[in-house]
Image (cartoon, rainbow, N blue to C red; front, side, top):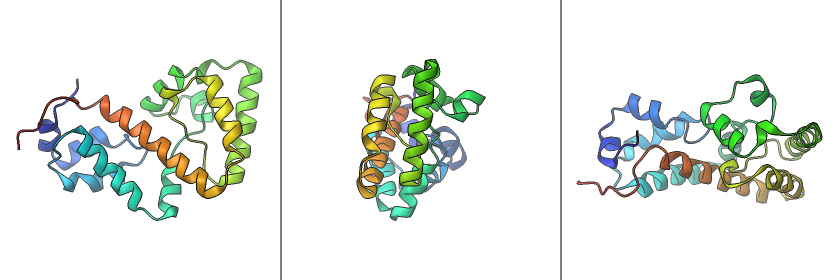
Length: 176
């Protein structure tokens, strides 16, 4: 059940981190850090606090956030060790239903990408289908490192926005 922003603001630290700790994949430190910025006026303010924290990180920290993401249609999906959010997002984009040729191409491109950039390919799966994901992976392998890091961070923010929208009501004003 979605919470209104007043309920979010009333959460003790541990509960806040437990509930929001994976809005940025496997990075509960992000939500742990923004908890102290309460009260949030609305969902957009919570999202902005998370984005501001990410933006303030050094480039190595941004790459660290990217490295916390699993490969699309990779080992974690096959072995069932994805987070619930990633599993649902990848399944929604058809990553769990690749034919053998698509799976082989995805694995090869994922490896090329990681070798080139030092972090996995990140794309908001919920906003794409498997054909577009494969196309974007292939095209983005040609980007410059700085541009691709920025693109990956932008995709992390899209994923975060959608995950937050699944947890918090968007239209209930906060009565501060």
